[in-house]
Image (cartoon, rainbow, N blue to C red; front, side, top):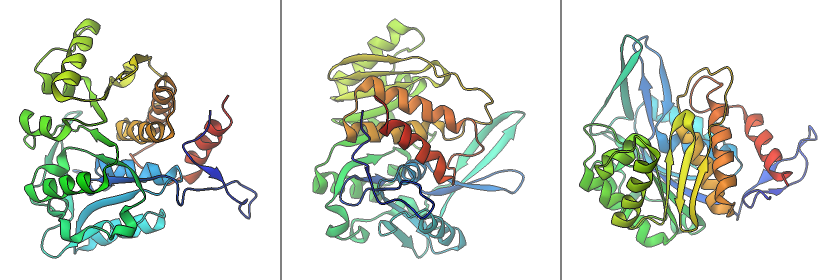
Length: 323
């Protein structure tokens, strides 16, 4: 098997191979970039689309993140972190009055809950502030979530991009109360080439159960037909994943993970590898296995976006040399 258009470049000074994706794979990632704030005063950079873009850059692709940040210290920090990771910043709009995205976490015993602030910079991403045509023309896949479309301005901008680009669309559903509605989310995913949901999200969107295998199969079929979804992936955490594609149904059994540290961002890691597989035309079974393995790897480290480039390089080498 081959990697998704990732080709060897000249050796680095340390003798390590590098990969250069210029002119090859540029996914456009649309959605929220924000900080999660915790009760102890700490904060963590995140937002599901931002996490996916970070991983894709780690895998040596050239993601174009389209989002918004405030004209504030946290917005500058996001731009600086992107620069240090080698991410393009031309898609980040700096809003003069809205703040950089913020989510406040609360703990009730061991159970966290989250307050997602309204009217953030990422909600106001406008058409006029989009990157120039030269930055957009190489886009090969458009990835977006659902939270970043809760305001009309960002939603209109995404519709504009879909019409302008005409590329395959991958929607990563992320239902966060009260910032979603069944009809609104149905409209966002209708006709998508790929949609990823978890078990609970599939049930809530369809209004049908997913508590047994038979129920899941029926619910997935209903969603695909009713919303004209070409390919649907349903993740089940430690129980694996299902793919309902144009070629049939594929089940990925659970990947055993030892020494779990936390599961934060594992789903975003799964999505990033799924995007690689979509673009690279990997077999569905192979894509699910690789996505599950990488998601499991993220469960063994603290946080959602590692800054260890060697972690990604190990996976690229493994995939490049797989038979």
